[in-house]
Length: 295
Image (cartoon, one colour):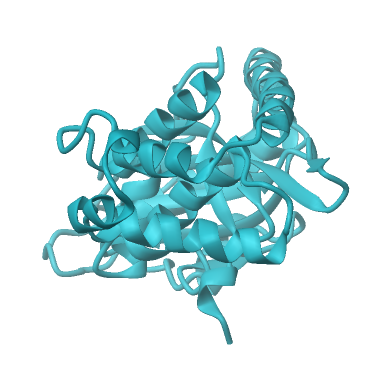
């Protein structure tokens, strides 16, 4: 099986369905260890269950179809992905799907981060899409842990009208951002580039301090200056060009970068995903998009 053609969260997240309860989701993801002692040797609250319940409520209010949940960094990070159904197709067969990502990275589970992500199905590389929506939202289902029985009030928790309106507004701005990105992606697809431009682009992304203008030196010198990630991106680009005989495009340059980051940069799948969503590699992708649009 060619693992680089699987989604970057393959093997980390588990598929779930909208009719699952938060407890069922946690059980399937093996995160149902609430009110027990884990390596920190401190009793834990129902934070995971409350957070998954919040994720579920957010997705339902925003009319996003939950698809996957999972954890990263030893379960410090809890996350969930849902389809926004704002997909688009470039060149007749290059499909891009859209997602909203919710994540809790703090132990208290009180703050929920929000991202909008476009995933190219051919290659399964992803890109965060900037929007006007809030980047964080309060976990209104989070309650203080009570060490005495009963540990938690099981009264049903639901989004009120005000919270539903906020959620609809946030997901609406995410959908608008995806739609705007679709137009940018089409422009990148229509922009042909040559090989010197491709090399210069990769250097500007991965090695901006190394060289100012690779077009002024020979091919051999360029390859000698190129570091591992630059070479990998060029190899990915060359492979894609063989499958698609047409000239290279700015869109293919961008995807060579995001594919390299998602499937090669990091010591493990866990670290690659963390860096792609929350770390320096997320900023690297943003830089690549800005440079591609400037071509």
